[in-house]
Image 1 (cartoon, protein in one colour):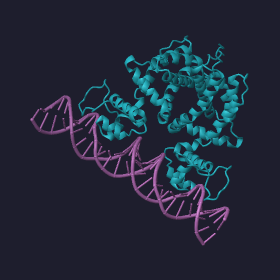
Image 2 (tube, rainbow over the protein chains, first blue to last red):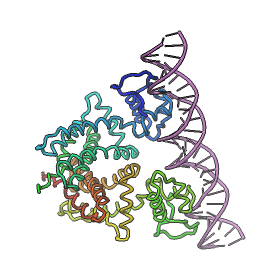
Image 3 (cartoon, rainbow over the protein chains, first blue to last red):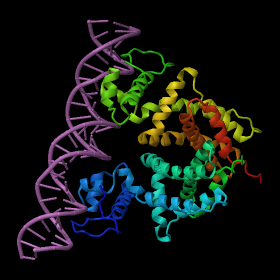
Image 4 (cartoon, each protein chain N blue to C red):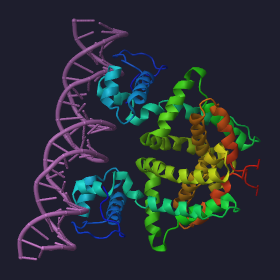
Length: 201
Length: 201
DNA sequence: CCCCTTTCGGCACTGGGTGCCATAACCTCG
DNA sequence: CGAGGTTATGGCACCCAGTGCCGAAAGGGG
């Protein structure tokens, strides 16, 4: 299922992969920007990347997944940051740090990330997929909050959704104010939306 | 495009519609519960409803739309409630009233609505569609808040997302605690997530 | 009975996604 | 160098969602 052997694995021989998920995603994103998401077929992407249509599906399970290639590693960063939060820390501080760290973009990737955000927030099919991907984020955040405040079921769920809502709102703000910093909006909205800690019992 | 003449329109003759969107949705939801969403094809639904496959698409634009047939009218209720809110009212009070009114289910539809919520929150394709449908909710709420607090761009956006997040969190809570009242969870989470009014300037 | 209107539904087609499988390309070992 | 193992490729056939086209069905009024 996994095309392109991971960098860590030993090379036991075998036919080398002809491209990488990252490269393929770059080709696809360029086409999406040029012709639009709907008007770009898998055949177009495969042809532009010089691979077969069937091979495309070895790198991505679906057309919409192309723009979410790095979501898994971002999610891993969030999980790690939350796991390393100390006990006494305000849970909101920990979440703000986790989310901003996970979503930090390298300066060279800024333009690229901005275009990606614009695509995702403007194409319905991609908005829809974003909701599914971000369900993973929500899950991590909810688990963390539930661990901090056992028994506060509804509170944890609300906080998890708040993380997701803040992420989306911040991205929207970012693409309508491209000069601003995503991280600033992210912090501001998280502080606005994350509820205060529930009273101790 | 619109099958099944609206109730208000005069009957000018023409072949009568063979079913209604509501009836078709009921048939489809039953099949989804029995066999699962993915394993139920449009052909299955059409056959069970006694119509042609092509006709299905005159009632719904897509398979996923079947479970969101009433979203448009719910959205209209929210808009109306917000429009009728008086000036001095706390914006959060108005939003709580609008959302709970729009999502109130008739006692006889409770079981039905619960099953629908379970389907939507458990099937990825339906979660995804929910995000697109709820973008309309968000938009209404954001506009309302932006009207109340001009210039508070990020605040309005955050509040809009909070409404959506609260709606989802409340539904999740509802399906894991089927005995509870959706309206209660809805109110609680909205109060948790909606940020305080920004300082006057 | 004819005309007008509206819905129905078959047919063919595009495009996303999958299972199957032969084959290409690279490894190591003899 | 050649054989055997390993892995990625990509063609083919297939299923399903969704659409444009269009003739036919089923009602009304003149």
